[in-house]
Length: 252
Ligand SMILES: *[C@@H]1O[C@H](CO)[C@@H](O)[C@H](O)[C@H]1NC(C)=O
Ligand SMILES: *[C@@H]1O[C@H](CO)[C@@H](O)[C@H](O)[C@H]1NC(C)=O
View 1: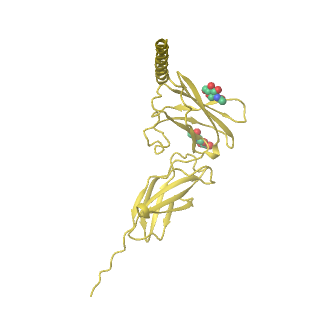
View 2: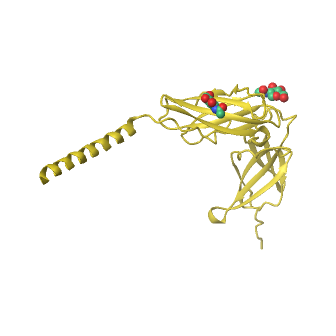
View 3: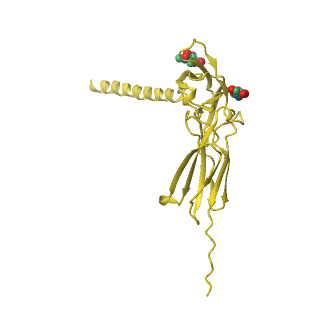
C-alpha cells in the first residue's frame, strides 16, 4: 500500500518542479512591458527652446515613444513634443550631461506660454505594452542655460583677467540677459580649496589677490539674470599658473 502512495508523491513533485521551471522560462522569454521613461525637461533658452530627454534602456530597440504636452488648467488640447531619436541631432544641448554611453532620446517643445503649468506625457510603447511618464513643469522653473564657452584667463598687471562668452544656444540675450558665477580651485587632494565668485553681469572680470606661484583652475556657469531656474553646468576648465615674482639676485 505504501509504495504506490510514494510513487504518486514523486510524480506530483516532478510535475511541480517541471511546472516551476516552465514558468521561470516563460518569465525569462516573455517580453515585459517597458518601464516608464525617466524624463527630465530643461529650457536652454528662455522662453522658447525647451527639451525633454530620457535615456533609452539597454535592449529596448523595439520600444517607440509618444510625447505630448498640454496645459494643466487649459483646454484639453495636446500638442506633440517633437521627437529626436538618439544621435539624430548635432544640436545636442548637453553633450556633457550624456557623457555616459547612455543613448538619449529627446523631444523639443516650442512656443510655450510664460507662467503656465504644463503636463508632459512621454509614453514608451513596445509590442508587450506601454507605460507613461507624466510630470508637470512651469517654464520658469526649468530654465538652465548651456555652459558659457570660450573661457580665457590672462595676466593683467598684478591681477588676472577672466573672460568668457555667453552660451551660443541662449538666443535672446538682449531681451533675457544672463549673469555668471566663477568657480576657482587650487591645491590638490585633501588640501583642495575652492572659491565661488559672483554674480557678474559682465563676461570679463579682473581678479586680484591671487597668490604668486600657485596654479588655479577656473570654470564659469550662466544663470538667467533675474534668477529663474538654475545655473548652467560648469564650463570646461582653464588652468592658469600665477608666476612667482622674479628673484632679485643677492649681490655682495
Ligand atoms: C524665440 O523667440 C524670439 C523672440 O521672442 C525669436 O526672435 C526667436 O526667433 C525665437 N527662436 C526660436 C528658436 O523659436
Ligand atoms: C499619455 O499618452 C498616451 C499615448 O500617447 C495615452 O495613451 C495616455 O492616455 C496619455 N495619458 C494621459 C494621462 O494623458
